[in-house]
Picture 1 (cartoon, helix red, strand yellow):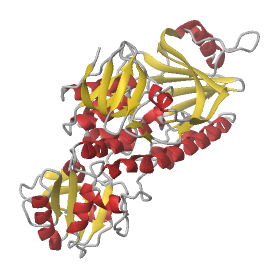
Picture 2 (cartoon, one colour; picture 1 turned 60 degrees about the horizontal axis):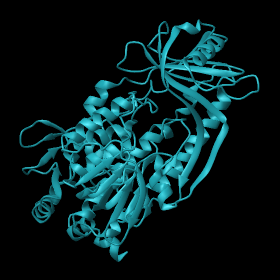
Picture 3 (cartoon, one colour; picture 1 turned 90 degrees about the vertical axis):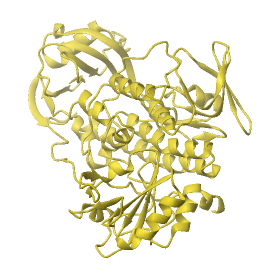
Picture 4 (cartoon, one colour; picture 1 turned 90 degrees about the horizontal axis):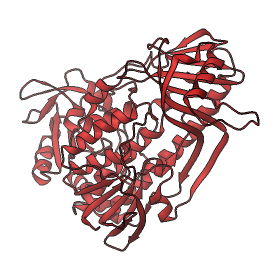
Length: 516
């Protein structure tokens, strides 16, 4: 049956689709989100958001719930011949700094993260439509019609496919998904109940002919993520995952009784896939998350790259759909995110190779996959056509905008820059007293789109940089007067002297892109 037209139809209700739906809904964009699944999955595939994704979740208003639902990364205990031989804590030396409040990822079951995001989306009156499978797409210059398996149709101005590696949206668009599937790199996975192992560690048993890994699931008393190389039958073919197979693998590689494991659920076989689409857009239809790119599990980058895709696309879709920006702005989504995905694919593939070599040696383990690059890949978009103006000693247009602790001049309360950024608006920071007139003029000219804050500027929205953290993070000298425009996705839009208000107006409307 037909469905009322919507501005944006999102296909797929995993973390990517939910992030995008929240970002659009909070901007008062009419959004519909559907999923072909008949019920919400209890999937635990992804192990949680990284530091950059936690910044996104803070902006969406859910970070405290995510932190409470998860745990800090656990140390990894590695075994050979059933004997513990080494512990590794790859995040032990990583700590929050004034410019980066979430130094470490958070371990949380994917189903719990999705619950939190769905609850947040519901506060905007939007709920996921389950059991609605996309089977057709037709578009013209002004709209898209999505055909559903039940015979219904949904009309939309834009459609975004967030429907995973087997994306129906991508297939209907005819976009190739180039790359490889490595059938030799297989794992069986599942959630199990286990008694005995210390829940303070991620346990990793390695030997010459396989491995078993157990990681405790936060928020459960005895739930664990189970991963292992597959069991094979007499002909060498992999045995389908089951509780009995898991018990045999566990006993073989750990030397412990297999009966310690019970109640295996969410059983699956994982093959290493390294693929990506060569474009993220066909007309009014976009791809995001695993629909656009899939990676090896090394480094835990897949879900995080998808969340950050959605965060990049949301504000752009909203501004174009509302008429606030030129449609050329939508071209920058692929321009910015496709190179990031390509880099993540190369990085995760390299880390997988390094890890597979490491586990052949005593003391080697999954900690090999963790590097400074995997902790926070893709700090910005300096190549983007949206990054055309300005730089400081530390930052370029296109870079991630740092956090910093400040103080409200009016009331004296502590106020972080991220708190000033929170919401769907642009933020204009004025460093130095000489920016005060420009801040007042911008506030009046772009009310509703932009919020202006003076750093060490004595006005109603002034922020005191008592510790010098803001100027230090932004690379601005104490005697410098500069304007920094921060995009709604918390990247630096432009850096300019106080007299460049025209450039700010052009940036907000994307008019400069049209001319470029």
